[in-house]
Length: 152
Image (cartoon, rainbow, N blue to C red; front, side):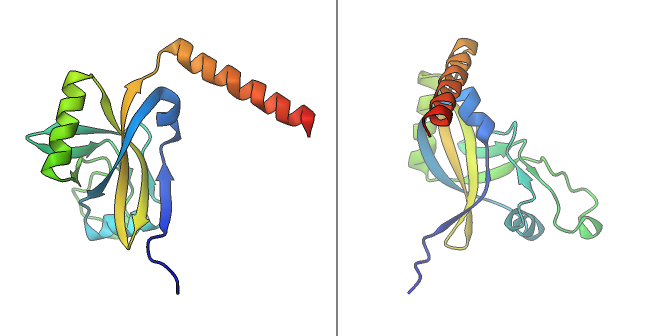
């Protein structure tokens, strides 16, 4: 019997792992319209440059680009980068508020995936990397790549 808890990853924000040090990960639901759900299921979504913002004890996904599934049938006022509400418990939202205020962390979407036929967003509590940290990561990556290449 096939288990239904398999996650199908729709998109990942690879730039987030380069620009930020991910401290903790959370899972959130997302409020979408029907035509947006169809677009997400068909990989018409991008998380590049997106972030999550707390406002009035609610969490919103800002600047995530979800293209319309059928451009000819899209609503006239459709904005692909509109803010979308993320669904978390009050306890999780208060925890995120404390972390962002006290430790000056950012909330970054890491990936969008399907879990039990529901679209979920994986969020990361993140601290921005400095330029020299990014250089160190690049150096380590090239060294490991060269070692693998020459050691077969």
